[in-house]
Length: 104
Image (cartoon, rainbow, N blue to C red; front, side, top):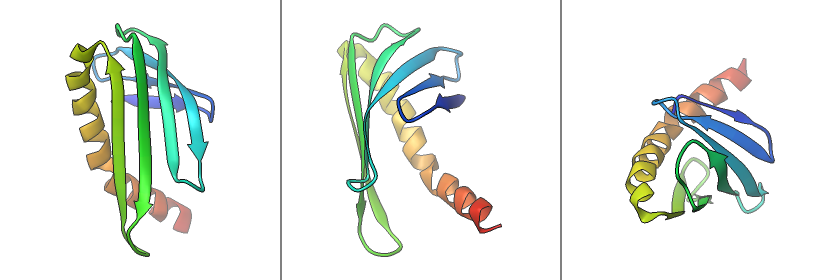
């Protein structure tokens, strides 16, 4: 992913190849620690998509992130898997960076 911008209702994601995906936020629940979004437009041939991210507390310093995607056509699943894997792998550094910024 190259960039992401938007608000609590809609966001635009620009992929490294320049493709754009417009996503509608379906669920944004701080109490459940869940976000769900649906790809609602953009440059890719997506017929139906629902992405879900849940964060489960393990203890005071650790959490488990569960990320699932339902997508049609099925051929798009592999491309989304690679992007999701990259995004989840980058979470620790993003959280550290965000925590450092807010501590200043």
